[in-house]
Image 1 (cartoon, rainbow, N blue to C red):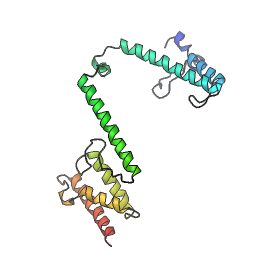
Image 2 (cartoon, rainbow, N blue to C red):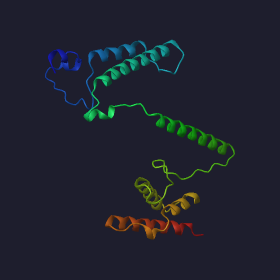
Image 3 (cartoon, rainbow, N blue to C red):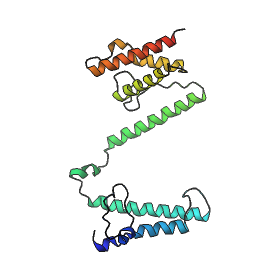
Image 4 (cartoon, rainbow, N blue to C red):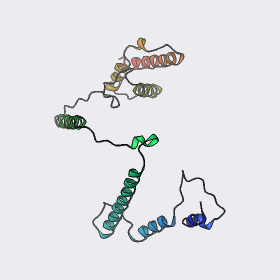
Length: 211
């Protein structure tokens, strides 16, 4: 960093021998930024969008002005960066009419399902399907590795407490999820170890379920 550029940063200007290399964690602030922050805190500090009094209005105006300047700068830089190589992901193309139609159809269907759910809540008759939100498919053993890991973790934590205070619905859900434990994969040492743990924990759960 040249001497003229160092002078923009008060901390660096006051410590000529300092070579600061930790900007990825915490960057030093140039004088212009510090002056702007000091001006804000001394004259306009208030919650944006949270009040109708003069100070809050001024804070809101400065907040939006800063956002607009940043947006213009990013827009300018976006136009300059070539959309090739590592920046290929920045390339934007307008969706074709078919994609727009699919989006609108999906949005309309989602809104209708949400309305139906609200009506069901009002009628105290809401029944939600146990759906994997990551895949959109019904949750089932082997359907999604992350879901399986989550079920395994839940089963283990509940087993550690001897399934105390576990509702009947949750007990049924766990049993239904694992189904026939004899069909669990056991081709590797890790799979056999997992299968054994699940069988032992489900055995404890079945024992708790018995009257």
